[in-house]
Image (cartoon, rainbow, N blue to C red; front, side, top):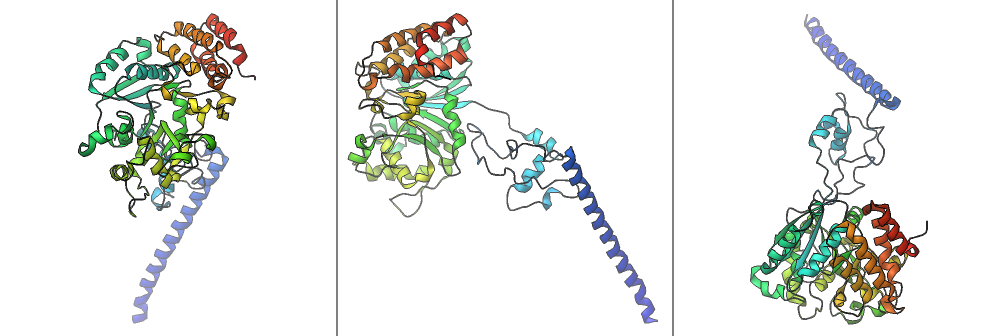
Length: 463
């Protein structure tokens, strides 16, 4: 009798096992059918190109910042999110599960609802103190004239320069003002040693060191000195942010291409980056990464964040540095070389590249992209090629119809150059990028295009 009572329990247990076995078989069959449908063209993920794969994980340079371009790409092609394969069953130790959810048909509505708006705006910063108003406005003219995409400009200036900047920029033509926005800030240094920072090298030059701490809502930024002239669109150098690897957070050009005439490797009394150091007149920054990184240093065994490293670095080396904040940046990246992306000299072309003979091969081949008129060459007669381009842009009233005449004047000035130092090949170096850009982008009048082509036909690159 006792044995008879056990039979119902055994029967119930077998029934439960059978039910779950059938349920498992049904789920496997459904998953197989779904995979077959995707292979036959019904799936969304398998049809995506490698360029689109992982797009929700990439972060564009600029306000939205940068993430690793490779991270998450082509990692989830074999996975599918469905009722039978929900996202919580996907790998939880990395981004793959989230990626597959967002790229699946079930996550398409979620993806479209949460997708960040496209923002192609570049962020440009400059610091101006003393008699730098006209030079800075000329630099801003060049940035706006050559750029095709909108630019937001951050101007840090002494209080008595604010009105001059605002008044000049608000009087520019309406068509030009739609291409940029700007904000003017006062000069800001840490209170405990503000006077020391302000007098370091040139007045206010060290302000650039504190931009990541001041502009906390800005992800990436292009800083330039006031004596910079753009001969290519700002977005061209901005695009170099996408070439940063996972550890790089800033980009600069070498101080010298030829070690025999280098300054740092011959005279520096402090550590510096690489063989010849770097020049900070054009500095591209992913400021989110700068704010987050802990930097190695030679002051303590503890790695320090950006806001912690600047003051002790100045205190240790202030008697050994010559070029102020640029020297401090060289010291930082000497100890953290993996964090720096080095771009070519054509993005920061200075008189040093031609005074002792041409030593910027990239500029010889493709032209100068950004002109850096240090040594005061825009305002004296030592380097007529540099001054001719500066004067052409300074006198421009931002009316495109008149720009061809300014460029004609620059061409005529360059035609008078001799054949020594920076004068040799000056027309090729400076007029080639201007010629190709304005022919392709700016001039809609065939007469203007023909005039420019006739003037600089010998500088047009051969096809």
